[in-house]
Amino acid sequence: MSFTVEVKEELARVIPQRSCCRRAELLALWWYGRRQGSWLVENAATARKVVRLSKGACGQAPGVEAVRTGNHYRFRVSPPVSLPAPGDPDARPRMSCCRRSFLRGVFL
Image (cartoon, rainbow, N blue to C red; front, side, top):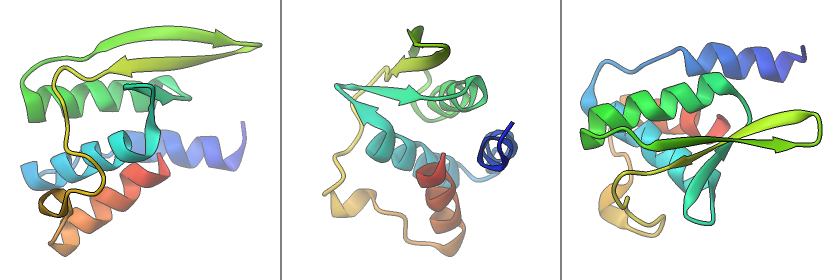
C-alpha cells in the first residue's frame, strides 16, 4: 500500500466536530471529485465519509455504486440534493477551521 493511500484512509476517518466544517469538507469533495453529476472516489473509506457527511449536511444518504476499472474498484456516489457550484462566493469557507476541513476534502 502506498503512502498516499495510507494518508487518504487516515484522513477519511477524521470527521469534523462542527457542522460548518463538515459542510466545507463535503463541498470540497463535491467540487474536486465530481464527474458527470456524481462523485468518483478511489477507496471505500472516502466513499463512507461522503455518505456520512451527506447524511449530516443534507439529512439523506446518497446512492453508492461500485464501478470496476481494470483491477480496481472505484465508487460512484450520487448526491441526494444539489450542492452549490464552485464559483458561488457564499459557499466558500471563511473560518480557519473550515479551511482546514476544505483542504482535507480537496486532498481526498
